[in-house]
Image 1 (cartoon, rainbow, N blue to C red):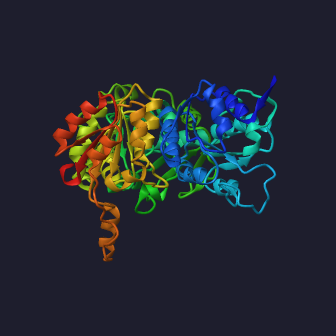
Image 2: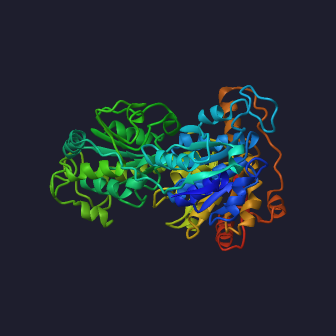
Image 3: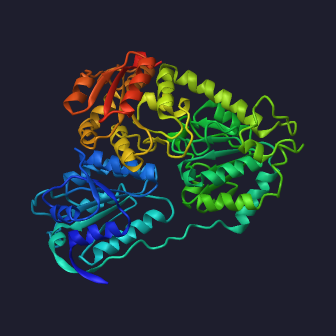
Length: 561
């Protein structure tokens, strides 16, 4: 049934109808009717100090909860501030709904100097989102919300921007608000699923590469890995899809030489929910000599970066389930346990270890192969992240099996935590992989903690990146979040410093004055501490997770090892 609503009321009613419980945003002159409706709704509003922080917090909410995050800004500079967060969500396939007013419905096409006027706000946001849509009437507002949620649920998740002319927000009209429409998941083709099952059943040395698109399919991925005894490696966004203490888990980080050797030695490679992107590989494409099977919900991505021999364009959960159902009953792949001495159930129970698994063939058992690759990857990771091993050990103890680390694009994360910090569940590492933006960690951690208040959440930053969004410390303080924020200080932009030196270029413009971070934190209503080494850091993390507000912990890089 329709009701007489303002545009602001229609928007908020539509968000409530789609189950939105939290929005992140900042009020402004042009979105006040939205805030008037929010104040009377059951939606919780969180006020970050910058629109980019609001967007990153909504992204963190979405990643941690598995549901779309919502960010509300005002016009012009505000929504452009949030554009970086939208672009980050686009690159990492995060469902993020960004809502802003636009200039009035009948605003002159070439402008007239209106407050917050942008030449073409919708086009600017359309360039960094799945799509940007400008509504033209109050009744269209709830429809546009429904369409946005449907788009984010269908296929590959991408952010959506809704541009609502500001004069419509106060205009009153009959509008019909409805809940979400059912969106069927993409079903795998019978021919392709059967072909993948045959290839995996015949494989002597299979391997699975799992990306962020496999997160919701973690149970099916584990079942398939155990059935064919395939080692599993993951991307940054796929980290934890198979628990790191599972006998078939190799670890995270596709760039390691150990992963390259494992993939090159495999006769079947199953890539699930990953672009096999340069931002994950770092040093060029993998050498895939065997049969490549790719499972992806995005028809374009399934052929990008590596052409598959078997392409399955489908929901990962349904695709992996279909492959499992078509494998020979009661057996594991012929190349991994032909003697019948190893079963999927023993792997699942965690009773198989590298030292006790008999070889099924000349190529050896899959769990022994995984153990060997895991040892090699661990050596690569420890060498690469030697400066941060004490840090990652302290984080591991504090996070336990259920925790979430929100990492920034910092050396302590991509050299340290990515491959050296164990993970036991999907979405346990929130990391800005594709766009690689700075300032992501702290606001993403705020969003994650609000989405998952029952688990430990820690933010990990470098000193340079933290300053991009340091104002969000007071946002976390207002929320009373027991959020540790670890700042590993190398006196500036350490990675760029190293790259300049590596090129033989003059090293300049990368050394930054270090603020008194603990004092800065205390001025923003947080606790501020210094750690002189991993042991002290471990104790401070325990205290911070039980505190009444966030705790910034300053750790010099030389003390992180």
